Each structure stands twice: as C-alpha cells, then as structure tokens.
Length: 255
Length: 366
Image (cartoon, rainbow over all chains, first blue to last red):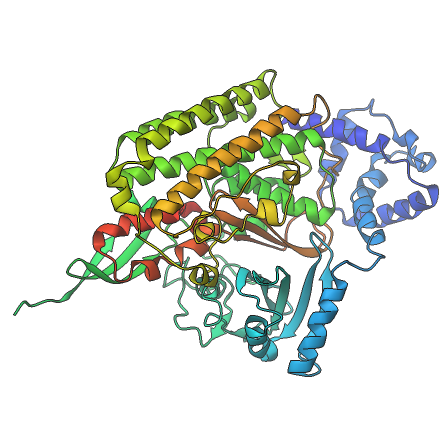
C-alpha cells in the first residue's frame, strides 16, 4: 500500500512538472477546480499528499502558483487535475470524423427505405475508433434490424456485442455489428421505457443474440418480444429481481 | 422388434471433461445425441454488478478471475477501454511489456487447452509436457509480478511492475526453448493415428453458421475466415510486428488443433520481435491523474484473447466508477453453438466437440 502511494506521489510530481499550459487555460481550470471542491467525494485522499509529504514542491512551476500559496494549497490542484484530460478531448474533435461520409451514406439509405423519423439520432462515437452510432426507439428497431442484416449495401452479419444499460430514466440495449462483406461496423442504441422494458428480439436474425438477450433479461429485466426461450440464464430460476437494475435491492445487504 | 426410447443424460456440473462447472442436459437415442442443452451460471459472481461500486483500478483484479487461463488479456481489456475513453497515452516500455505478457499468456492458455484436450480424447502424456512448459511461463510471470494465475499486472496508463534485471533475456531464452518444444509436440501428437481418427472430420461447421453465432477466435478462423483483431483492428503496438493469422480449411476439430498450435508459433514470433525492440529505459506508467475520473461517454473495445474477441463496453457518467460495465466474453458466445454441433452426433464425440470449443467457465458465467 505504502509502496503504491509513493509511486503515485512520484507520478503526481511528474505530472505537475509536465503541465506548462497557457495561462488563460490555467485560469479557467482553476475556477472549475474551485467549483469542484465542495462536492469532492474523497477529501481524505486528496489531503494525503499534503500532510504526508510537506516537502512536496508547491505548484510553483504551474502558473496558478500565487493563489495556491495559501493554506489549502493542494485542494484546487487536486480538484482540477482530472480536468485537463477532459478538456483535451473536447478540443480535438473539431475536424469531421473520417467516418462521417459513411454515416451519411447509411442515413440516406435508411431514410429511403424506412422513411423520415425512424432513426432518432445519429452520430459518430469519437471515443475509441469512431464508430457510427444510431439511436432508435424500440418501435422502429425490428424493421431497422432486418434492413441492417439483409440490405445489400449493409450486410451486417456479425453481432459483436449486445449489452443492456439502465440509465434510470430509460433503458437501452446496445448492439455492435460488423459486416464481413464490407468491413464496416455500426452501433445501435435501442431505447425503451423503464417500467415496461420491452424490445423486439432479433435472435432470428442473429443467432448470437439468443443467449445475450436472455442475459439482458436476466440481469436487467428487459423483455425481448418473440424470443423463443426467454428464461433466466445466469441467475437461478427462482431468483427475485434483476440485479443490474439501478433500483435493485439485494436480498441481504450485508453480503 | 427392438424397443427404443429416448433417455436423458445429465453431464456435470461436476465433471472433469466440462472444464469447470458446466452442466449439459443431453437427450440421447441409443448412442445418438438428439438434443443437448447447456446450463450455465454456476460460477456467476456478478462481476459486472460489483464493478459498478468499484473504481477503475479496483476492477482489474476482478477481471483476473473471469478467464483465469489468460488473466493478462483480461487486464488489458479493461485498462485499454478505460484508456481509450480517457484518451491517455501509454509509454513505449509499458506497451512492450504488455504485448510480451499477453502473448506469453496466449501461449500458456493454448498449452493448457492442448494438454487438457488431449486428455479429453484419451492421451495422457501431452498433458504433462504441456504443463511443464506452461510452468516456465508462470515462473516468468511470478518473477515479474509475484503471481502465477491472477496477475493484476496492468494499470490504467501502464503496468504495475517493471521487468526485473535479466527478465527480458529470460523471455528470449524461453522463446528459443519453446520453438524447440513445438517440434516435439508435432512429433508426439500431430501425426498420431488415434488422435487423427478422433478429430478429423468431427465437429465441422460452416462459415455462415460461425458468423451467425458470433463465434470468434480459433473457432471462427478454423472455418477459413481471416479475422484476428490484432490485425484487423490493431490495438496497442501490434501493427509493428510481423505475424500471420493461421486459418483452417475444413473446420473440423483437427484443424482447430492445428490453428491453435500455429497461433503459438505466431505468438513466439511476436514475442521475439518485441524482445529485440524492447526499449532500454523509460517509464512504465503514463501521466495519469491520481483519481481516475473517466469523461462522460460510451465505448466498446474488443481485443483478441486466446479464446476470441474479448470486449469491454463502458458507459461512464464522468465519475470515478463506471455507470455500466459489460464484458463481451468470447466463451459465452462460443458455447452457444454447442447444441447445434452436438445434434446427431455420437455420444462419444460429445467431449471431443465440447473440448474443441475451448471454454473457460469463469468467463462464461462472469
């Protein structure tokens, strides 16, 4: 444990030395950091480096030094630290994604075949490998799925992922498809209500969806309509509730 | 007139040939399998649920316990997805260490498969040789991170431990040793008549079926599809190495065996190149904030584990803990095809076909 802390402290030091950012940037950063302070979840953790290592060079190398010379000097820095990464991510994606034309092509075709309004939202997920992503309501999912599978210029024959997410306001089923014929991929997020979570099953189109839909039903309580065998798969058959739902109450909280 | 009736045969959950706690309800007519239903969940520990209350670093040891034969690739799946979402850069030295341990782990995993599979079809001695050679790899891991099975080696931004002095050289020596061993294995197994008659032409399936069922790894490549994420969607520094992707021709069990054995050779190639290019000095951890707050967003990243595509789907709400973490476990997808393969087979092929899929129940049940 102490070893790890030491390691991290060294990292910390390095990180500070490595952040000669323009002062304008630093100012806004500090503000954000201060706002962030009161709601910080782990006050103990951020205190640790200050008390344990008084010799820690104050943030003199960073432009925000004059303010930080006060008593709570570690605080603003600690609060602001996660920010730079987030900022960079925001700054970068100004130029259009290389896959934007592909997404546009998909959308044109979908509009042709399914009409206006079938796809609720479409964007490029810039995190990772820029996957074109569609958001649809469950009403349109079955016809869209059929098209993705069978249309000549889509041919998404390979289901890579089926995952359910409970957003508290609604439920989502996330699909990732790949096409061996064309080498392109797409992600689809199907939205459904939370109380009556129902999504049409696509296990007749992709056999791989069978167990995955059972898993999503088991853990999240999403009903897949017309699934041939929608039973629990991981939990025991007589289990009550669906554990991955955010309002799930464990039988025994002590465990 | 002979009276025949169907019989239910229960296999497992405690059975040496199911490689863990898998139960199969098999309906047989005489010796022919009419239907088979896998029952899973005996090893379900709720990793995905637990992960929602853990920060990203704390999740890593849990992934060790999913596919416990290749914990290094599991480690990598979660840290890689997190790094992608945060946009972190990883130091060279750490990337090389990661590739070396992942490929070593692939070899160890394939050795376990090969040994136990030969046990399944009735040969004892390859098992002993395979575990002897695997031991060499485990010793290397032990020296590197102090653990033999559950390594908990990788961290978001790098790796936990640097290679001790002389370790890289030892890896180089092992590569040479293993190359020699491969010749022995082929002499021992590949031409063995009993092995051939147990596996040639058994458990065949088509490309289309494999794609339908979302198979990945050797299970997909055996049908002739050239699909390896290290090549097709390169991650880490795999694009720097030269290696081939072994594919099968007929799609039977014998081809699967050859596929995996050739994958070991390819992994050795990668390790050899990585050892030669290994950077002299440098950091093993990138610049990572002390508290990992992953920016809001969603990501799915798949990597090539020894068993197939191991994916990690993270939904983050900007906190230090994931809102939802989903693992796409290759064994879970691969096992699904089992009933189709077993239908109409002789009962004596059950264990051979099941073993050929190469499942790890810790991963199926997660």
